Image (cartoon, rainbow, N blue to C red; front, side):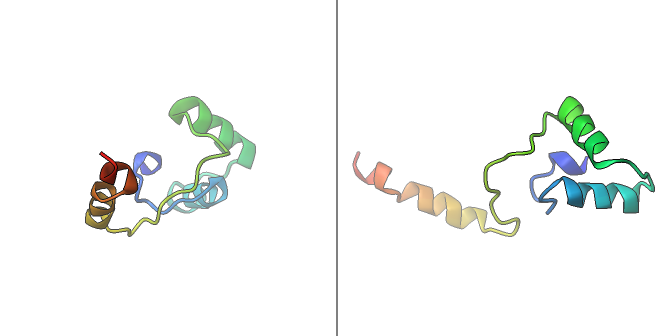
Length: 73
């Protein structure tokens, strides 16, 4: 499903609602979608900042290897 894919580019319930209307041809209320996704997928309205969908995973791994925390050891 599109919600479980971290690189899908959906950043909120309004974008998800538009996707549902466009792809699934279902017209539903915003709160219905919010409650459904919370119940079935454990989603939350307030979430931490998402990372960029096109970020370089190798660069992240290299950064974590050379972080200050690892240098102190």
